[in-house]
Amino acid sequence: MRTLCEDLHAKGLKLGIVDTSNVPDESEAGSATAGQYITWFAKYAGDSALFLSTERANRHSDTQWSYYAFTNNAVKARDAKTIMRWYQKEIAKLQSDSKTRAVIDDPDVVGN
Image 1 (cartoon, rainbow, N blue to C red):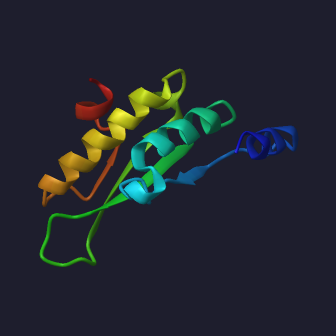
Image 2 (image 1 turned 90 degrees about the horizontal axis):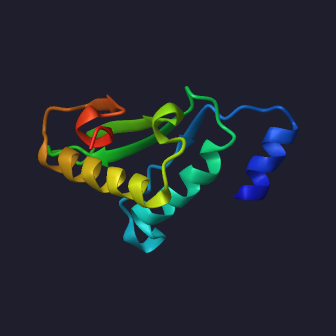
């Protein structure tokens, strides 16, 4: 992952959106892996880069999703454990909330 980021940086390419949609999947090491990847990506991304993820909405249909993202402005200079906690808090919040459809830098999560 670090090599990819260094290569993008060397070529002058900017990161726009990094998809972290599989974060809740514990078979993929979930939020701990996302936290580590984001700390690597954050070094090379602009402030407006989004780390975008999805969570199944607390609705009767499995086809409805809530979207959440953290901007690089919020995550830069944070450690992987802090970002991991943010993912865990956001996932728990969205799993219990049937109304929220999209949130960026949720102040209830990022502010704590």
